Amino acid sequence: MIDFVTAGESHGKALVTVVSGFPSNIEISSEYINEQLKRRQAGYGRGLRMKIETDKAEILSGIRHGKTLGSPISMIIWNKDWENWTDKMNPEPVDVPIEKISIPRPGHADLVGVTKYNFDDIRNSIERSSARETAARVAACSVARKFLSEFGIHVGSFVESIGGIYPKENFIDKFFANKINSNYSAEKLNKISDKSPVRVLDKEHEDKIIRRIKLAKKKGDTLGGTFYVVITGMPIGIGSFVHYDTRLEADLAHSIMSIQAVKGVEIGRGFKMADEYGSAVHDEIVLRKGKISRKTNNAGGIEGGISTGLPIIIRVAMKPIATLMSPIGSIDLSKMKNIKARRERSDFVAAPACAVIAESMAAWSVAKLFLDKFGGDSIEETRANFLNYTGQLEKRLKENFNK
Image 1 (cartoon, helix red, strand yellow):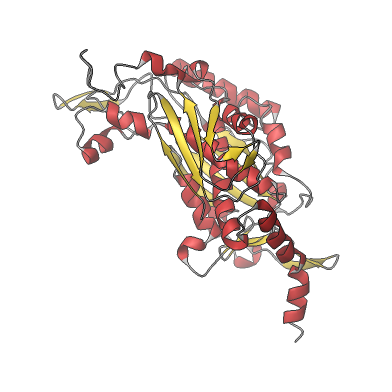
Image 2: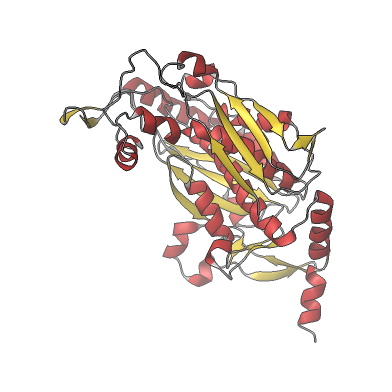
């Protein structure tokens, strides 16, 4: 079982992650991990913090000469902004007075955090609940992403909408119609979307979204959005229906819903399927050149909690950032009086970055269930198990049903 844990506060000295359970001999470098961290920081509408930080993971253990050892991998990402917060965030008591925050922001973890953990300063809630924590997640999940790439499995994403601005044509419809060539890699999708500052696939769409973001900035407001995560190269048989916590779509939904500000996840056609007849949405099974396939992919690559071998399609909804430069109503907990919420340095929109984080978490879920099935203490052993399974699929089906 693979696992990772993150530690650190938004304005603390550093973020730390420890990753365990991966087999030995996976080729991976800090350069590969840092490229994913760079993608997470990009996007039009990000705040001033992204101008301060240049996230880079320093590998401390578990990797030698560019290959995993099979032991826990530990990494650290130093926060450059720590220099400005040494008194406010010092682990040790300080002699200087520190102003306590008593005005919570609606939509954030401020109020529920101080209530649950019995804090007398909202700063304690802000620091750990901040999406800054996802930098450590992306570093950790880069190991899963690289592991999956060894088997031709790739994860990509693109932004569908920001602030209610949708494209004229949705690229993802080709995946639903199962008109994407089986050799298509989600890496190609990222090469297109990463060229856009808002990670969309159409220049006209990009221009409209940037105008909407500029308007939100002018108003001191924020925007949310929707995006797709696509996983290509999946084999049949990842996940299971035998128990609730082995279902692939359940694990994916859990991983992605754990990302700050994510409020909705659909697999495949999702809610649209609820409005149609079954005959219109279920993916007909056909033989194509002697191989089992489907006419469509409305299920988004998962049936009965198990991957079908078609691309996995996940649609995600992210709410607007909670910190507003033109704050809405709140209360001052120290005086128990109505007041406007406080400001905290933040982004105006982060859907493009959130899509990269969702890629990472999706890679983690797939890698976890992939290793549950194929196991292996080394990548060579895992590959042998994988090739034995995938090479015998059609043969086993024919033999089982012709006894």
